[in-house]
Length: 379
Ligand code: UDP
Image 1 (cartoon, rainbow, N blue to C red):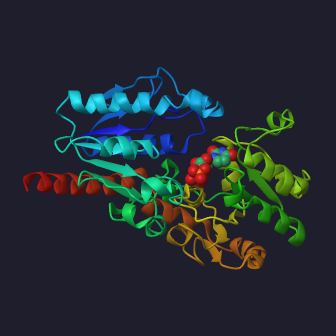
Image 2 (cartoon, helix red, strand yellow; image 1 turned 30 degrees about the horizontal axis):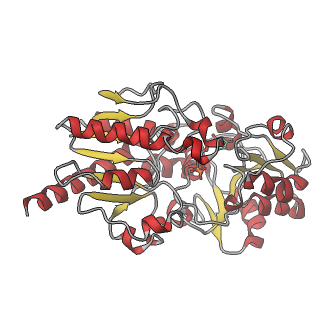
């Protein structure tokens, strides 16, 4: 099977640190190729992932363009998608397009003709976005979607859900051989790992840390700012995450009970998480896929959080973490997490969240989509 994997124009694959979707593509492609799938990657020129062929129109990632006004950047995705559509049309050997480009990927690939290859579009994001597209979507029997958790798909608008072939949980290379590694030495601190933004609930975490007296470390960017020094240099900003941080999180960051480190990249990120008593998820939104959850488990760190989004699918309450509906219970559960066996989390990650498990599941979906598209053409 030959798949055109569309990772979009924003960052190279693998990305240099930050880049959720590009990281997932970099995690998925090597085990897919081991399963015999040939991969044509649509990305930017600086991508270094080993594939059969690279299709690109931009020499390098266009991520920095996202800070510019819409009318100056609205050609970026169309230019990339145009190259993808041309590549699909000019050659007859693509069996399936696996697309990861938010909204525009779905719309442009649905506009191809009945003789063009079928498409599997992975929904990596919050499906309350783009209601006009998702609420009216018609894939014409050629375009199918998958979510990154069952909860996410269940919440999708009906028209989009009608195109869903299921969900595939996210994977992390850290899960590979996690059951063979020695469980980490634990410190007393708790970590919230992720972008600082209202959905991730850092404001609740910092208040609980002060009220109940536990040490909390926040790791993650605030909007485009990756370090406290970068953010301090900015006096005014339209970015809503900057306002959230300044008004609701920063007043509690005292450098002792609560610390904000900015973005922490591997391997320092992995040491920080592995050494933590727990990773805290005081979520306000329905977390769609939760990369940080599978990473924490792979590093032997239980996850304690509010039972929202994908968390109940990923965390086994009482074994690999604790979940609750009641935010006031979180501090007691953080205490209890210290008594969980880190080896249980590592075993769980090695069984469920490796790149090989994710690739095998995608290959099943590819076969299902190709089969249903060919039976449609035969009608
Ligand atoms: N991340 C990181 N350093 C940080 C904060 C986050 O490397 O300081 C990584 C984190 O480990 C995960 C990704 O950024 O791999 C965030 O993905 P997730 O699905 O958890 O959240 P999203 O931002 O996609 O909602």
